[in-house]
Length: 375
Image (cartoon, rainbow, N blue to C red):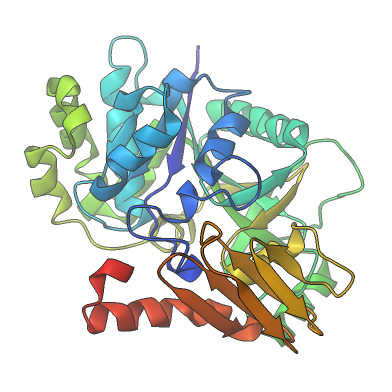
């Protein structure tokens, strides 16, 4: 019998969503797509397939209590703080070790299938999402492969990585399809993205991953031995200290984690491994990555403006104004074209839409000038 678990990576700082996103309230704790936070939506989606006691959230120590507060009755011991921020490869090694520690009495590494998800994606319909994941988890449970999900591109997107396959998927069909990955491609420039769109053989990389834990450990030892060889050691630490997880990172785990390289699972493992497959997504998907992404799912007025909060906007178009000042500030705009405006109680962002990917630079400048109360 196979045990299914889900790991939701929720440690990002969401700096592109400043000033709404802050250190203790980053993007995953914001209500950007609905009346629920992004992390709540992520849990709700996967809990249709995997019970909450088998869903693990990996985050940073600073976010441990804020996430527990938002999630209420979600099992607090399943919200795990990374000992140090070390990117996604160490994060998932930690998740694998904790899963092995929790299920040591009933399931070994060959009988635990892990789904790796993120807390910042827009997915519809849920039925297609669950059908895709159910099929893929069954597949990796009986095959020694690493897997991901490929999304049909709907635009020449330069902000996503791409997956190349030998033969295009039939996206007109609602049947599951799985193909061997030919290669992974980094974020392209616009002309290259247009080529990818036209070929039919390139898919958006969803950033979701699936594997049996024994296969994951095997590939990590081969491709990232400085991390892979420590997974069983981490398992022993968490097995002996299960009750202490609630209080934050364990000192023994910190010693090991401090030596891990800062490397992503994409670059460190998925792009190097040989046995990698991709499943066709039976759902629509988008990444909520920066302020301009709101225009793809929020309602607009006749001039394609997105307006939230206490605003007066005249003779403006293609502009997003998010006013979350609690009614304390009236924002007035005249003649705005293709801008993003974000108002909070203590900060205002004004930015052309073609510069929203660079909002992180503002956060960087805040750090340099030691204005920490605005982080």
